[in-house]
Length: 443
Image: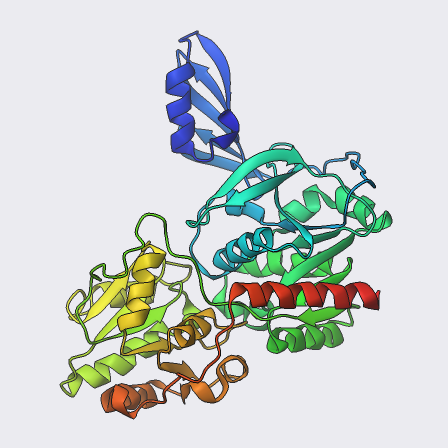
């Protein structure tokens, strides 16, 4: 079906199979409309999951345009049980193994497995804006489309799990209608870092986040993933004199699912032991430069343990990436692994000397919870959110020298995390459902 065509490469393959080699022809392929000359797509119109319209000349980006908000009629159905609709945003179109997409996929998968409440992951069709239901999520977090359009009844809950102000703008009439008929429209709040620390982001992203937050306050509530994030929202509300709806907190799980492609826990990892592991996108606030500085100090004194970074390349990181890739120990004692499967990541966690979490600021700290779930030692920067998440079960450092000292002492000197009671995604989902109920009862 053409609706499953999600990438430009898939679009070209579809055009190649269906073209008729007319002088001029128009071929619709999923999110793409191709205007072809003699079977060659010259101008391509792309309905982006980010709710922009993008134009290409063949495969070269030309321009990106905003879209006018859609106006439509909500389908009503009072003859069914209450539902939670969980909007997974662009996750259906882009497989992304980083923090927020992983959280969204695991909550979706867990929600489908429970029976306490009727739960439906949904996504917005980028072409029409219509919300459709996803009834299956496999162990690789691929979302399988069923395609049924959602209907609504009073008492339903619609949760936005991703940050997409363009989608809010495009479907604002839908959300306003939903609120009027008694649907609770809620947003998951991960953090306020783009506002509190704009230096870590592109100006455009900070502006879009601020606009998203302002729009979200007009609805029914926030589900914050930590007390720290809730406190930062309260502070922002007071500072900007912006009224906010009720806020409740739930925690995140840690037993993320391994890939179908490889469940073999005996799989050989691509790094020799001993090594220290750091998991997360390469971006300025994550503290990779401080970790490199700590290992340089450690290696200069004869240390032999390796440093392993796992994560994709982010933004504003040219300097750190150059330093990493041109480091004298790169691919010897220093490794950067990108795009690995969860089965490999699980093995890396299991065999690491310790897990390092060096972020200067964070909304939660999922690698801490994951590491403690595997009973691993965690060496974390001493910031409030990590104290909230890790408490007495992890060891803290304030600067690269303190981290270098901890690495030099070795694992025999580390705190043991065996008494830590890990939280799985079923518990996380129950906490989220309780938070939803508390918001409903407070309105």
